[in-house]
Length: 218
Ligand code: HEM
Ligand code: HEM
Image 1: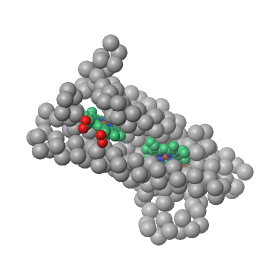
Image 2: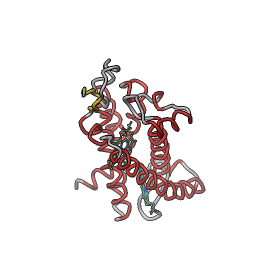
Image 3: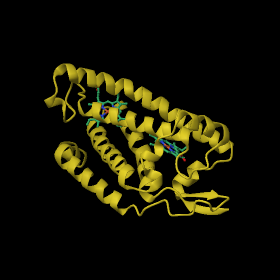
């Protein structure tokens, strides 16, 4: 067996920080802790925007173009598995679905109000009809996101039962392959992604997050 690095440090950080952020967003919404919800929301927005940029300039296995597969390739991958190093064909559709669901959740959140004290930062620019619709979307889309997460975790468990240790790879970055057919480097150093993430996060926090941050830290 040969160890091949498939997930760079940013992809792995993105994934596990995203899991923590979504748990925080759900918990804070349930508890009515809107300041925490906002800060976690801006954090998630910075994560996702960086991931999409990294999908253009990042590692081979991070590329958005690597997510595009024909329906035939999906069927084949479900029947016979994937030979490729990054996301498989079926998994790629899941990843695309996540990116869309997360974007919808984040953008609708920016225009959502709790009708008491807290308005998303774009509420002031939107008509009351749009704000009402965004709030509806923010609720409904979360249900879809929730089902997608369940499906995602079930799929990972099924792959594990079939002997594929995908979680280990998402933690360590390495996959074990029998052949060394694809040995050329597929990952890039992640530092640029972390720089981009830090810049986006600082801009978002300074422009939209000040009140929530000062409430949380006072
Ligand atoms: C809030 C819950 C979760 C969300 C939103 C989520 C989302 C995602 C996304 C977007 C990717 C693609 C990564 C990328 O290319 O950037 C991914 C991959 C992955 N996730 Fe999750 N995930 C969640 C929970 C979990 C959990 C709990 C596990 C562990 C059981 C897990 C295991 C994995 C693995 C192993 C991959 C890589 C799959 C592959 O090899 O193609 N995820 N997830
Ligand atoms: C992926 C990111 C996000 C997730 C998963 C998320 C999730 C949720 C959930 C589950 C609720 C409760 C909905 C319900 O009661 O049915 C909620 C409410 C809310 N969210 Fe988010 N949210 C996200 C991002 C944001 C962002 C970025 C903002 C604005 C900065 C925001 C603003 C709000 C507001 C104002 C409410 C209260 C709505 C009400 O009281 O009716 N959310 N969010």
